[in-house]
Length: 121
Image (cartoon, rainbow, N blue to C red; front, side, top):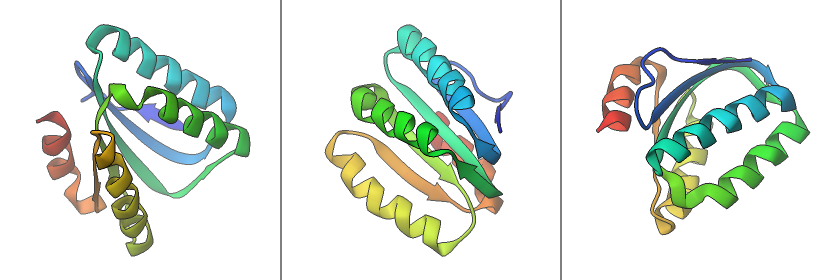
């Protein structure tokens, strides 16, 4: 399940994810992101992950396909989640994201305000 956060504004989309995301929810999120791209061309996304997050295979495949075809429209991606594994995965991904002009950064849950400031700047 996802929630679009009320602090989302302009070209910044904040999303909190908890539980499992299915293809219907993924399709809704993609539609929201595309609406923002239409309005702003480049967008930034802050994703706050809950403790027990999952995604269906179909939704994950859709997400990957969308990101690969819309990279030029992504400015910043912030991931808020506790855990050293997630921090390491984001660090690896950030290396590749940087090659295509996307800034990507991991934040621990106690750094949510810092994450918002970074994504909004």
